[in-house]
Structure formats: C-alpha cells, structure tokens
Amino acid sequence: MLPWLKPAVFLACLIPLGQLGYNAYTGNLTANPIEFITRFTGSWALILLLSSLAVTPLRKICGWNALIKYRRMLGLFAFFYAALHFLTYMVLDHFFDFQAIVKDILKRPYVTAGFTSLVLMIPLAITSTASMIRRLGKRWQQLHRLVYFAAAAAVLHFYWLVKADIRRPVQYGLVLAVLLGSRLVFSWAPAIARRFSSQRSAGRATANARASKLSRNSES
Amino acid sequence: MLIQKSNDIKSAVITPKEFYLNRRQFMLSASAAALATGAALSGLDWTGGTPEVLAGEKLGNVKKSSFSTAEKQNSFKDITSYNNFYELGTDKEDPATNARYLTTRPWTVSVEGEVRKPKTYDIDALVKLSPLEERVYRMRCVEAWSMVIPWLGFPLSSLIKLAEPTGNAKFIQFVTLLDPKRMPGQKLPIMEWPYVEGLRMDEAMHPLTILSVGLYGEILPAQNGAPIRLVVPWKYGFKSIKSIVKIRFVEKQPPASWNRMQPQEYGFYSNVNPEVDHPRWTQATERRIGEFLRRKTLKFNGYGDQVAQLYSGMDLKKFY
Image 1 (cartoon, each protein chain N blue to C red):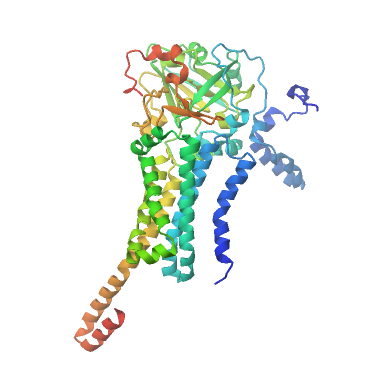
Image 2: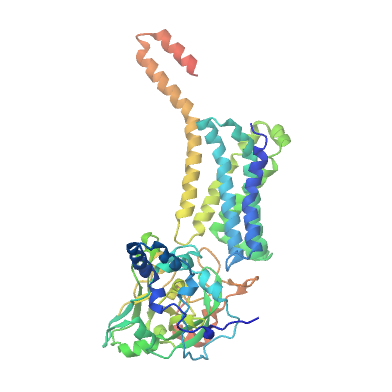
C-alpha cells in the first residue's frame, strides 16, 4: 500500500471546505450566501456518506480490501460536513433562534429527516476510535448499521426539500439503493449458492450420493 | 479617476440592438459567412460578452411612481444572477447562464378571449403603449427570500382598457412562450409547459399590478423574464409570470402552473401571508437578499393597505 495515499485522501476530503473558503474570500457565494453554504455542506455530507457506504460493496465485488483503511475517514468527514451543515442552519440561517429551530425540527418533515440523520451519526462518530471498536466487539458492527438509516434519512431530507426538480435527490437515492441492495445480495448470496448447489446435487443424488455430499461439504 | 457615464458612449460605438438581441442567429450566419470566405476567425469576436451586456439598452422617459418603496434596492447583479426561471434551468444561477438562448425579437403578445378588441401586439409597440414608470417593489419568493427591485413598466390596467373586456371576462390567463430551443429548461418534464398563471379581474386591474419591460433603467434581462412579464408585488413571486406571449380573458378561474402541480402547497391566490405556512416550511419570516438576519414577513408583502379590500370576506387560510 502506498504510504502517502491516506494523507492524500484526507486532503482530498478537505478540498470542498477549501473551495468554500476560496469562494467566500473572492465573494462568489451567490446573492444568497447562507443558502449556498447550506446547500454546499449538505451535498458534500451526502456524497461522503455514500462514499463510505461504497467501501464494503467495492471490497466484495472488486476485491479492493485496502479500501477499508479509508472507510472511517470518509464517514468522519461525512459527519464533519453534516455538522457544518447544521451549524450553518443554526447560526447563519436562524442565528440561535432555538424556538424557531425546535419548531422547524418538529414540524417540517424535511428538517426532521435531516436532523435525524445527523443525530444518528453522532454515536457512530463517537465510537469510531480503535479502542471503542475493541471495547464494543460484536456490538460495534450492530451499532454501525445505523449508518444505513442515517443515509436514508439524509436522502429523504433532500428529496422532501426540493420544489419540483427532483433529479438530484433521486440520483442520490438510486446510488443509495444500489449500495444497500448490494449488501442484501451479499448476505443472501451464500444461502442462494448453497440452495442452488444442494438442488443440483439432489438431482445427481441417485447417481452418486457420495459425490453430492462431498460437494455440499466443500461449499459450506 | 474618470468614471465614464453610460451617456458618454457614442451611440455609434454600441452594438446595434438587432445584433445583440439576435446574437445567436447572428453568430450562426456570421460563422457560416466566415467559413464561406475562409475567414473563420473573424467570427470569434462575437463569442464574448455577458448576459448583462445583452440587456444593456437604456429605456428613456421613465416616470417615478408614488407606489415605489424607498427601501434599499438590491443590486443589479443580485437581481440578475439569482433567479427562479425554470425555463432557463432550475438552479438559481442557471437563468443568467442560459439567458443567451432566450432571444426576444421578434416577439408578439396576443390579447384574446372575452374582449371586444382582441389584438396581437408586437413587443416594440407594446412597450410604447403606455408611459413607462419606475416601480420599486418588494419581491417575496415563496422560498422565503426577498428582494427590492426597481422595475420599469406600465399598469396592466392600461392594456386591459384597450382590449375592452366583455361582461364574461372574470379572470385573465397568462401564458409563457413555449419553445424548448429558446427555453432549454422546457426539454425537461419538471412541470407541464408552457408555464401559465392567472389573476382575478380586480387583481389584474389593481394599480399595483404592472407589466414590466425593464429594470434599473434598462430593458429586462432574459433571466428576469424578457421581454415582458407580470409583476404582482403582494403575491409570491411565482405569480409574476415571465416572458408572456398570451393574455387571455376568461370566464372561469384559469389553471396556474404551481397550483396545478401541487395544489396543497400553492394556492391560486398565493398572496404573501405569514399566517399561512407552506406545508414544508414557514412563511413567517424571510431573508432579504443582502441581509444577515431574517425579517418578519408582512401580510400581502406590506401592500395590505392597498390590496386587502380585494379579499374582504374571504378566508385567506382556505383561499391561500
């Protein structure tokens, strides 16, 4: 593995923030800078969250096991941009008007979904350290399945917010569907393979019962 | 430092109007001619320029109006670079980017339906129909942002009077141009094209209601709805339909695009009303473009004194 790759990925994840800073410095945040920053940080949170969810399918399909080294980083950067997104909403958009914010979260489905997504990511970020992974053992993996719900809530948040042009939220939704769907396929695949092989061997059973037993054993 | 005023530029130096208004067609014919003569490069000079340049012609003889607000006006740049005009793209900056597609000459507006004097107006005649006034209005978008815009235009009522509506004319329907070549956003089935809007006759006759043909003293940039658009300042921005080709007087309430698509979210009246939230977000506050803190949204966008009586006896929570 290339030793510079991990810092390179780290820096790459900071490029959007740099771009935002550069746009702010050059006064290119559009006529409505608060809206622009909100959209920008939200989009990158979603892109990085989906990227972190792409690691496992890519490992299984392409055998790129080294990708696992970047999964935590991608997830934490997704949380980083989601937190910036929420801070933009809280500070710039509503300027600490907590009454309005709480009302928004409770009353507006798209805000509820977005806030749910962020809240679900908090325990995942907290338990992302090596010592926490060790301490939680098997439960760590169960806990981190929350990311599926966080991603679904994030896509829903986007979908419920647009007025008419649903193309982009639908694109994110399709990517998420493929990423989650592939997990279902992977978890069913061994069972399907077993069933298929047992059917096939049952057909041959009369001819060669011993061989079928061997084949079943070798595949399980 | 010498700051050159626009009057200092000799008219001979300015690109002739028919050239820049039809720049796209001109470029096509120019490049064809250039190719034919083997001087292809000569066409390149015409590829520069920004949408602002396209719409830079000054409109003279403009009266001030007592209907104007004295509030701080948004900059020309803000008004022309942050637009909702799905026919030119759904992102806020798309309409300015795609403005070059929307050529506005030739252009006619057909006045028809329940009128004694139906007529198809050429846009250049329509602009001269009535003395132009500057109307500095607040514009409140349904997305909870607002601007202050110095429109140039004339009261819709002056066109209505010329058309002589019959007793059957209870509403007016407005229709935007349908031409996916000039309005590339219409290639996408985001909504049913063309965009349509409607007003009740008394709303249309109200002195605040104008047809706008310009802003900031210049002809209307394409991204703002060139060459002619409606401005109804007490209603959410989407009621102020852009790039109009048809004004039809009708007896029944006509369809309105957003209302037709999502009736539970956008009513036919769509008067600015902080007490009636959009189902998905609050309408109680708004962000004035250029300001940091949100403002409280005013009922009828602050034009209640002039227009509230149009709706007396109506439940505005029901007729939102």
